[in-house]
Image (cartoon, rainbow, N blue to C red; front, side):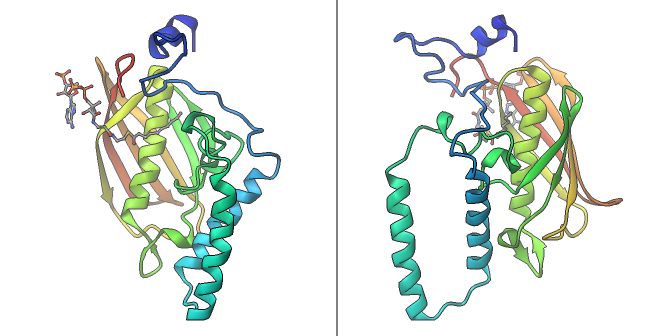
Length: 218
Ligand SMILES: CCCCCCCCCC(=O)SCCNC(=O)CCNC(=O)[C@H](O)C(C)(C)COP(=O)(O)OP(=O)(O)OC[C@H]1O[C@@H](n2cnc3c(N)ncnc32)[C@H](O)[C@@H]1OP(=O)(O)O
C-alpha cells in the first residue's frame, strides 16, 4: 500500500497512536507470532473440535475433560492480547492466516484480479449427513470475498450483504477450490462474486456487496 493510502485508511488518532477507532485497512502480518509450532497448535485445536463434534464421552470422561480444558484455558487467559497482535488472523504462513474460526484454506493465487484457494471443510464443519454446514461455506466466502475486495481497493471494507447459492452438496474432508473476485466497483460499493468447486462440480456460488469504509469507520 502506498503512503498516501496508508495515511487515509490508517489515520493517526489524537494520542498519536495509529489505527485507533477504525477497522484497520492494514495490520502487521507475521510468520513468527506464537512461535515456530503455532501451526501445530492450531491443528491440535482443530482436531479437538473434530473429536468433540463426534464424541460421546462417558460422564466420568466429561468430568476429566472439563478439568483438562480448565487448565488449558487458564494458561491462555494469561496471554490474552488485542486482535491486531494475535497470531490468529495474522500468520500468513498458516491455513486461513492461523484463524481457527475460519475453515482452513491455502491461498494459491491472490491479487487485484481475485483470490484462488484450496479449502477443506473439517469434520467439525458438519451440517448434516456428512456435508458441510451452509453457514461455514458462508464464512469461507465472507473471508475470501473480503480478501478479494481488500486486494482490489487496497483498503478495508465490510460486508453489506452476502448471498450464497448452494448448488450441490459440499463435502467434508475433501480439498475444494474456492475463488472470489471483484465483479464491479461503484464508488464505495465493491461487488464480489465467488465459486466453490469440487473438481468440475459447482458446490456453491457467491454474490456479495462490500462497502469500502471511511477513515475511522468501525
Ligand atoms: C486481507 C484480510 C481480509 C479479511 C477479510 C475479512 C472479511 C470479513 C468481513 C466481515 O465479516 S464484516 C462483518 C459483517 N458486516 C458488518 O458487520 C457490516 C454492518 N453494516 C455496516 O457497518 C454498514 O451498514 C455498512 C458499513 C455496510 C454500510 O454503511 P455506511 O454508512 O458506510 O454506508 P451507506 O449506508 O451510506 O451505504 C453506502 C452505499 O452502499 C449501499 N448499501 C449499503 N448497504 C447495502 C445493502 N445491504 N444492500 C445494498 N446496498 C447497500 C447504500 O445504498 C449506498 O449506496 P449509494 O452510494 O449508491 O447511495
